[in-house]
Amino acid sequence: MARIHFHPEHHLVDRIGWLRAAVLGANDGILSTASLIVGVAAAAATKNAVLVAGVAGLVAGAMSMATGEYVSVSSQSDTEQADLARERNELRDNVEFEKEELAQIYVKRGLEPALARKVAQQLMAKDALTAHAREELGISEITTARPVQAALTSALTFSVGAALPLLMVVISPIGAIVPIVSAASLGFLALLGAVGARAGGANVLRATARVTFWGALAMALTAGIGKVFGTVV
Image 1: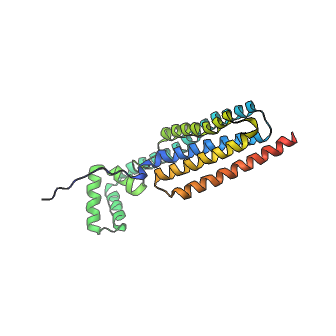
Image 2: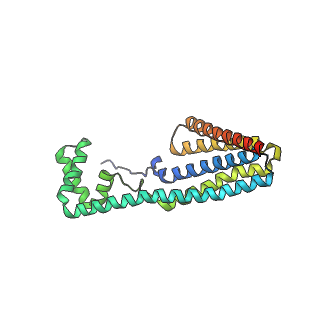
Image 3: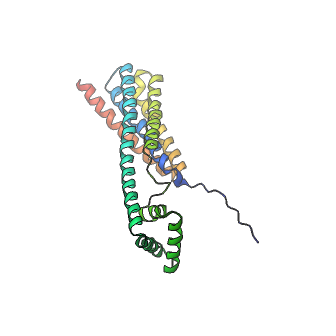
């Protein structure tokens, strides 16, 4: 008799929770801090003023990212918990109706009615709430909201991303801050886009081009604003 060998599989979707927050945080850290630095430097500010603005942007941005992620993902988590509580009550009050409801989900996916009812019965015998959460609500271990993880990941990656253009300010002469920070930050953004696409199994060239284009546009706009206000002042 042939022996079936099972091996663990690692799917890219398993990374969706932390990958989204990490890419968003690092991208925002590079782009917002570089844009701030370029805008302040274009206004003919001193190197110390540019550094102070950059550091302030790093701290404020990291806290903003952490707070925003925590609040938004917590709202998602609250909604999930409310749906699970309602589903738990429905399973307690009318288990037969819920069993038929689960069976109909499988029928719509292609199973014969008799087999669908058998599958529903066996799954609910093991863990009825998990079965309904996954099939009816779309809530699973992979997609469930994790507010603390999202907040910490975003704050950390934002800080790392923001530190890169700040490092360029430190090593750049005052007259070359704008071109050096702009060029280096676009390179960082392109690299981030490629790494994020690679980790998520997406098209690397498309992701790199997308993030580089919007990064260049943002820095060009802030440089223009800094130049105008710097001249006026």
